Length: 268
Length: 321
Image (cartoon, rainbow over all chains, first blue to last red; front, side):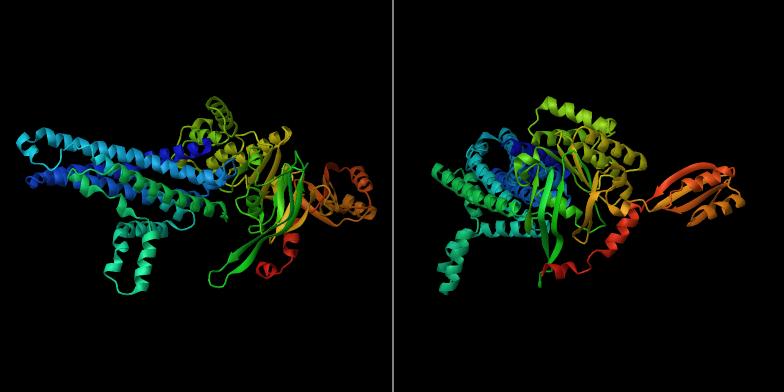
């Protein structure tokens, strides 16, 4: 655990000193502020638009950070050969991979927290400046705590995307890793549709393939409860627990695969 | 117990995607390095030196054969607590300072914060970059990175050190400092295994050398014991040698070659036998002064070129199949 912690802290330090990361955070904050401006133009619906855009920004920028830093986590160390000095020390390859993963998840956690704080700050300002009569017409309170359920599931989704990006980064180039990770993320958004393909397809083979893909592909759509929370609809504790457990199980398998691939790899 | 031992260590890589063919990077290397030795692992580019080092550090896995460090298999984690490694042309994290890098690596060895700081300070001073300890490594020159690489390799006070081209990127002053450092490490009882194609470094530092070519061990042993390095003649340098004295000298013994060096000096190349004593006495009797008398040996460079050229020529692709 000590080694994993040391590697993770170094990844976090790299992220903090990486200007690209700062730009992403600043951009996310700017987007949330922009959502406020858009809300100004849509009478009555302003708070919903702000919530929609804010949650979407937290998700999209989190995925961007997870993918574009995740794909370089291991690849960069191998390409620059800094890994030679690390693995010549009493460091197991599994510890190195898990340390890299934990470092990026820590970075994402800090980012999500910063973005969430900025998001709630915009909402608090909106709440403060809006007439109580108009506030009463909103579908849900501006500072609705239930939105944290959506943000928590976004974080589990980001942790899984990071694991997938890391897995691909243990054996392929950054470009290919990015394409594969983003491909899985996009297809995972439609996993619910795959399950219901039997209602629109005639061919049993196609239905069987769609079902197979549904079970193999990560069901990222399950982590998306944004539409519910912006209307103030609750997300059940059971749904939260099961979805989180699914994410953690998928993540564990992904990390196991990453460790297995990396442990057998020759560094030429 | 040997510091390093390999037995039939072999590594094949696969070349080509559509029609993969094995390529012999290292072919049945059997080698022993004793504790406290400075061992030179020599060979031209592509000889298999770096492949051997990577196998010893388990950065790659052998196709066949076995390697041990300090009596333990190379994959043993406890071995890595007792070794240090300087990669060829090392790269470290641009965003860290030299001090932070050593702190990070010290943590991987489980050293406490106080001990990490103490060792980092001492090592950065020892390799001559104490003044730049808080400068980001991204701003370091190649030579400075090499020095940081050496410092990180020494962080755990290793018993066995692996240096891959340690003089690479260093200016003459830096090379001399690193030579002195290696000799100090030897005096402390540390085993130093270094790969190089700079033969003068090996001549100056090594107890023993191994010479590699095309993935195979060509020869190994102490420089003084390898028969190629036995004296094959003498070089006599005299001052104030007149033509008549030179003629007289030729009657006393064979002179292989005479070279005028300027400033009244002459170099005489003599065979190993007979002994140069009579020649020297004859010349001194005619007013010449002795400047130097040295045995002539084949240089490591001459040996290297000859042996590498004579190494088995079979394609490394053919050998693998």
